[in-house]
Image (tube, rainbow, N blue to C red; front, side, top):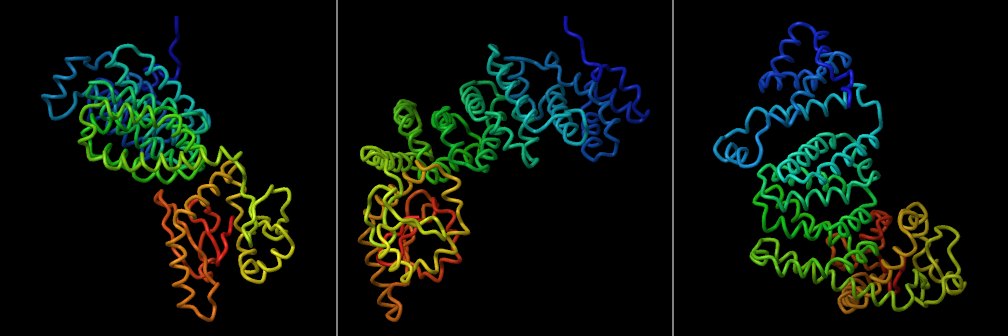
Length: 448
């Protein structure tokens, strides 16, 4: 037999000021107006935290699911009324109030990590619920609460560290494949939480986990089943921006190699997907995935070599046979002669910039760096005619300093966009973001 926590005993409301107590009692009886007034008092912090915490018994009452209609009864109410019934509205207000209390008072008493763990625990409870309506309602309410808490800096990082990605994708999959009306709200909240998580570095590791957890299948289902404009904008953002941009990373390409084939087969079998607005972008993503998988397979077949090429002549050999610049610790040379020539030609200016921008080497594993360099080599060879032509044009327009240029491959939008720029731009370029812009200087390919 379970015992209710003393903080949830309704007699605690007797300690509220009289005018506030009247609002609390009316809210507990189902008054949406008074529940909203209670929420406003908590959010505005017009009450001291110890007094605000006395609203907890009211929130406990409002979050009781028994007064909320279920199944066909709920469906009829939602489809015939402009506004949801008071019990649902009051429960939503109570969730907002609970989130506000956690942020302004001491009732939580834990860290963001503890709160994230609690969210994941309740998602697991919701996913295990067998009744479709109750499962959809609980998952939607948990996502609603998480989305409200997510506006606070640090909570998204805590969610990722606690392992939110797999249960979040499972939740989106469950809500997308149910006919319960309330699930549409949950899908919207879930995608917004996913977007917030994909703003936290390292993004590529989060994307790889999401792909393995079934993100591609969720995107396909939402494209066919979800009529909501905000949800459409979210999965369009994923397919057009996030997934292509992160396909420069080894972890993401490996995940795609393992999962994209099944997703492509599923997409071919779902009626109506080929007529959605997303379909052309999906096909474009598929072409890019196929190309990057080809680069990955080719790189793996050669033993996955790391970035080991002379910064001057381009000669390749085992990295232990190279000399490394002692200044930036980022460039390698096959001989002292190559190092002296490259210092005179270009590295004298680049060395201090590279030494202060070590993000690339420190943030990515050797395998990630090796694959990025393999991708650069493949794209540099594929685009060689264009870059050679642009390089000749640059030298023609700069006859006094013909070798003061570098070739930029910009992967910001997924596919490389080459351009030839003056080395005077080097100090203005964020060279630490090597996964986004990778450089070949002068007539030589410069491997950072």
